[in-house]
Image (cartoon, rainbow, N blue to C red):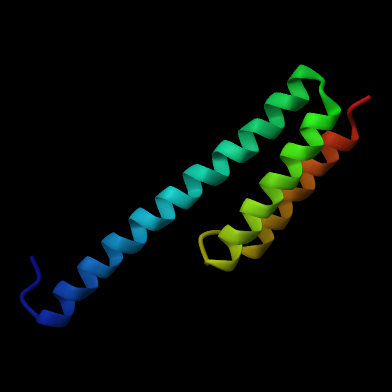
Length: 87
Protein backbone atom coordinates (compact mmCIF):
# COMPACT_ATOMS: atom_id res chain seq x y z
CA UNK A 1 0.00 0.00 0.00
CA UNK A 2 1.20 3.48 -0.85
CA UNK A 3 2.45 5.73 1.96
CA UNK A 4 3.01 8.95 0.03
CA UNK A 5 0.05 11.27 -0.42
CA UNK A 6 0.56 11.71 -4.17
CA UNK A 7 0.78 7.94 -4.65
CA UNK A 8 -2.50 7.48 -2.76
CA UNK A 9 -4.12 10.09 -4.99
CA UNK A 10 -2.81 8.35 -8.12
CA UNK A 11 -4.42 5.10 -6.96
CA UNK A 12 -7.78 6.86 -6.54
CA UNK A 13 -7.53 8.57 -9.92
CA UNK A 14 -6.53 5.34 -11.68
CA UNK A 15 -9.49 3.51 -10.14
CA UNK A 16 -11.88 6.27 -11.23
CA UNK A 17 -10.58 6.25 -14.79
CA UNK A 18 -10.61 2.46 -14.95
CA UNK A 19 -14.29 2.39 -14.00
CA UNK A 20 -15.10 5.03 -16.62
CA UNK A 21 -13.17 3.19 -19.31
CA UNK A 22 -14.89 -0.11 -18.45
CA UNK A 23 -18.30 1.54 -18.77
CA UNK A 24 -17.42 3.08 -22.13
CA UNK A 25 -15.96 -0.18 -23.49
CA UNK A 26 -19.05 -2.08 -22.38
CA UNK A 27 -21.33 0.44 -24.10
CA UNK A 28 -19.32 0.24 -27.32
CA UNK A 29 -19.39 -3.57 -27.29
CA UNK A 30 -23.18 -3.48 -26.93
CA UNK A 31 -23.58 -1.21 -29.96
CA UNK A 32 -21.17 -3.30 -32.05
CA UNK A 33 -23.02 -6.47 -31.07
CA UNK A 34 -26.30 -4.91 -32.26
CA UNK A 35 -24.77 -4.29 -35.70
CA UNK A 36 -23.70 -7.91 -36.08
CA UNK A 37 -27.04 -9.20 -34.77
CA UNK A 38 -28.86 -7.17 -37.44
CA UNK A 39 -26.47 -8.49 -40.08
CA UNK A 40 -27.21 -12.05 -38.93
CA UNK A 41 -30.96 -11.47 -39.10
CA UNK A 42 -30.61 -10.01 -42.61
CA UNK A 43 -32.26 -6.64 -41.88
CA UNK A 44 -30.18 -4.17 -43.89
CA UNK A 45 -32.02 -1.01 -42.76
CA UNK A 46 -31.70 -1.89 -39.09
CA UNK A 47 -28.06 -2.86 -39.63
CA UNK A 48 -27.37 0.51 -41.27
CA UNK A 49 -28.99 2.39 -38.40
CA UNK A 50 -27.10 0.29 -35.85
CA UNK A 51 -23.88 0.98 -37.78
CA UNK A 52 -24.44 4.73 -37.51
CA UNK A 53 -25.03 4.46 -33.76
CA UNK A 54 -22.01 2.20 -33.26
CA UNK A 55 -19.81 4.54 -35.30
CA UNK A 56 -20.89 7.46 -33.13
CA UNK A 57 -20.14 5.59 -29.90
CA UNK A 58 -16.77 4.35 -31.19
CA UNK A 59 -15.78 7.88 -32.19
CA UNK A 60 -16.72 9.19 -28.76
CA UNK A 61 -14.65 6.46 -27.10
CA UNK A 62 -11.71 7.36 -29.33
CA UNK A 63 -11.95 11.06 -28.46
CA UNK A 64 -11.92 10.18 -24.75
CA UNK A 65 -8.79 8.08 -25.19
CA UNK A 66 -10.39 4.72 -24.44
CA UNK A 67 -9.49 3.27 -27.85
CA UNK A 68 -6.65 4.12 -30.24
CA UNK A 69 -7.79 5.89 -33.42
CA UNK A 70 -6.53 3.09 -35.68
CA UNK A 71 -8.45 0.50 -33.66
CA UNK A 72 -11.65 2.53 -34.01
CA UNK A 73 -11.03 3.02 -37.72
CA UNK A 74 -10.50 -0.71 -38.23
CA UNK A 75 -13.65 -1.67 -36.31
CA UNK A 76 -15.80 0.84 -38.20
CA UNK A 77 -14.36 -0.26 -41.53
CA UNK A 78 -15.07 -3.94 -40.86
CA UNK A 79 -18.62 -3.24 -39.74
CA UNK A 80 -19.31 -1.01 -42.75
CA UNK A 81 -17.94 -3.65 -45.11
CA UNK A 82 -20.13 -6.31 -43.52
CA UNK A 83 -23.24 -4.11 -43.81
CA UNK A 84 -22.44 -3.18 -47.43
CA UNK A 85 -21.92 -6.85 -48.29
CA UNK A 86 -25.49 -7.67 -47.31
CA UNK A 87 -27.78 -8.48 -50.25
